[in-house]
Amino acid sequence: MHTLYRPRENIPYREGLEKARLKSRREKFARVAVVADPVQPAADLPFVASFANDHERNARREEKSLSQADKQRKEAHQALFNQARRRKIETREALYQAVADREEAKELNRIQFLRERSKSYPCREGFDIVSLEYKRNEDGRKLRVRDRYAQYRQELRGYTLALRSGFCNNPITGDGVLKLQRPAKPPGLEAGASEEQQAEGRAGGRSEDAGHRIMLAHGSSSVKNRHHGR
Image 1: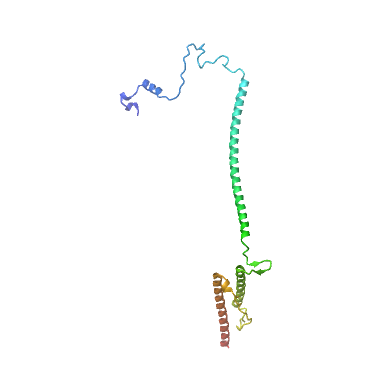
Image 2: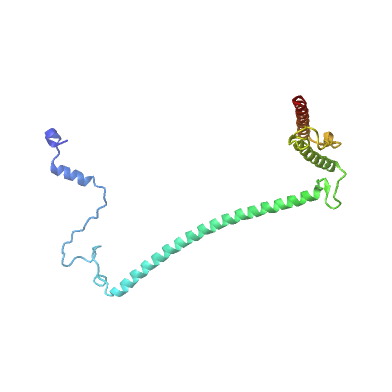
């Protein structure tokens, strides 16, 4: 607030204000000693230097000492920087080495586990690659049934394609030209195959039977139409 808008009794005097400011200062000001004779001061004053130490007479030596001190300071700083950098690199390399050792140990454990398992578990393949025969066990029987099932499906597919393409019938007369035999289902298929394979085989057989009946009906209808046309 401006002094014009303040009561007169609340306006401090300039001298009192300066004294209050000087008293509230918190800086550490040094008290200057009063020198009685500035031409020849007393020798016991703390700020009076002797004539021998008044100034440096060898400026070159002083510059050399200052440069050496600066050089030592820079070397110490560089040494600290190099030490910190070396410690950081060593820590990083130790971390990488620990990860590599852990991965190597894991791989060795895996190889050892596979070796032990290969010793304890015999070969479960149902086919002997030396004698080229199926083994006389459960795996060999399942593999034999699976191979027969695959061969049966292949023959059944060829038979179905031949019927649907009209390769077996004469397109003009509708008479059968090539007598194809439906492939017989191998023995033991229902007992050895899985449920999915059995369901797939039954669906495939129904589709093949339906296709065969359609082709026969088409052939008979073409023959009837030919007779009615005459």
